[in-house]
Image 1 (cartoon, helix red, strand yellow):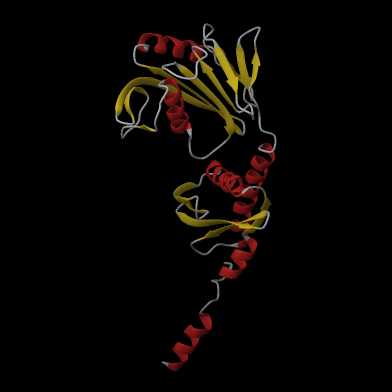
Image 2 (image 1 turned 135 degrees about the vertical axis):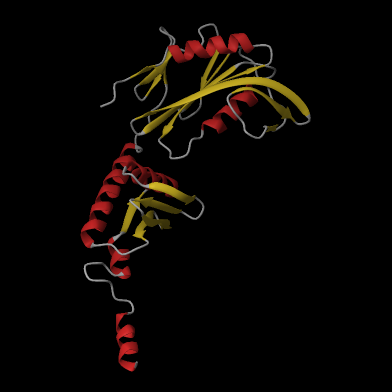
Length: 271
């Protein structure tokens, strides 16, 4: 019994033949990146999913991901270390050096490519002669008869409205070009467009199950009827989001405007 117990003690903390120890795995799987925390987190997430990993749990505030591929679970931790971000990708079960290296090389390659692409963010450009908005190889025609088109400071967001007015009901088209993200922000853009279209005086309250189409929202205690449409396209390492919101009374015109916008979209061929 004593010999058996001693043998068991000697095996504690040792890796199985051919498999790395936990300390070896952590040392080999640690990477450091220059960049903002949210960008490194998203680049890691997107690189994993592009290589067949499924995300089962994600916590952006904690900087953690739980992913699985081929039946094996992995844990990801992204933490800020000064101006750098430390990323650790560890399997929940034993792994060989060759298998770990193959996974890490692929994820590292994808993360590096995304972070490099995001350093040069595309901007919207407007061709007034042709009435065309374009960015990142994506272009479309906003409603020709509308009066107002305005860029934000970064030229990543454009507001197009039926008339030039700060208050009152006003059909609104919002278009955004952004870096690729693992979680869509299209609903947030739609909510913003609805607020502008309704000239909301207070923070809007949206119904549960907020979906494209007719919707009733609360502007304070006042119910407001509206309609909205939206879509997004991935163009390389960027995403383009387009949303149109119209107040009550514009339903037929709203659908026509939307069909015209969608029909005018031109995308550069994918490489």
